[in-house]
Length: 417
Ligand code: AMP
Picture 1 (cartoon, rainbow, N blue to C red):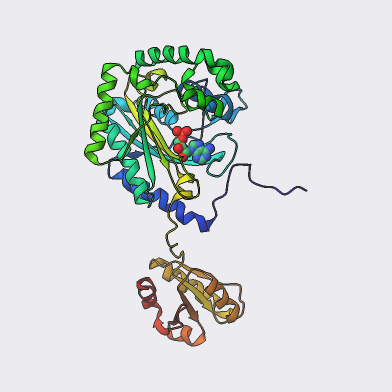
Picture 2: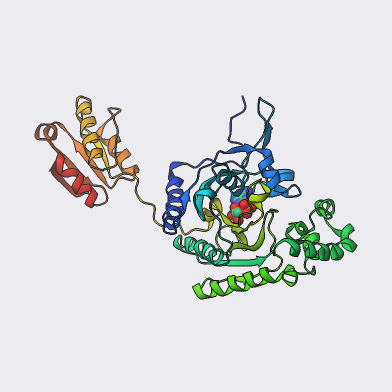
């Protein structure tokens, strides 16, 4: 029988890697908590139409990457490819906007896209993100970009580049679309197959196409910043000034459009420049999507958000020294003492210690071998004499130093190190 393996592009996280994941997650939670973001948890599965309407039909995600299936009732469902649409759906469904003028939410979880797997690109991956509803910016835009930079720095990721752009609003998009089409049409036959097909429906896609021939043509395309309406231009100037006032580094990249349709005005991407991923790997993408809530059937509501790719952070983050996952390893001299050992282990756990024990009844030598292999700094030995006296031998494994202590003093001793 063929060996069963996980689905291609979907990876297990084993306990030895879990500590680094916890660091990514707890640092994020702690940081966004300081800004007043509350956590939203939405289902992994949504009606397919949610993503088609918000992300846009002529996008890579909707055209090729979604895991879509009909459930037994015939409804088309999709594993979420990103978090923004689900959060907006939940915000609308629960009429949160009626209860508070501005909502600040964060989420963390797995996303699903059927992309070609590569280093840092998976079919199940994890994102952490923030969404703000009800504030038109630009100051909150700057604050959010700065938050991402602070998060990366807190993880020791310094070598980054923050790219910003503005896509304007309403008529900007229409005027720019026309100008871009005028420029692209004569080059149509040189474009990639995907871009040729999408050209009339969604010419902006050509600008962030990964195909080499498209990139060469995009190089000389007209730039959206030259087409901004007055309000959007002011918004962008104020955003830049706010970033400068906070000391947040940024670079204006007029060709940044990103792969989803819903963005308006502020758009940003944070790229890592070092580490395992190589140069220019996108770590975080975000932007304003002032039209999406209305698009989903709600009242017109300004909104902005970002998503950080946690799998990629793991690849660029400094290693750090792993913390031991145990405080003590209990060693039991004879089989008869195992019941007693159980009670002592529980007493130590109740006192806050992380304790493992080898209860198979093997030799002292084999138990010490397991203690040495574990991450516990102390072996705690229970033999007949200690059981009688209500004590344990506490042996520091690194130095070999050993003391006999009453059981109720052991927790203190090993937690102090
Ligand atoms: P997006 O939702 O496409 O704006 O992506 C936001 C961030 O999620 C990116 O900058 C990546 O760090 C991460 N990301 C997107 N797609 C994948 C993937 N297939 N595998 C791993 N990370 C991803």
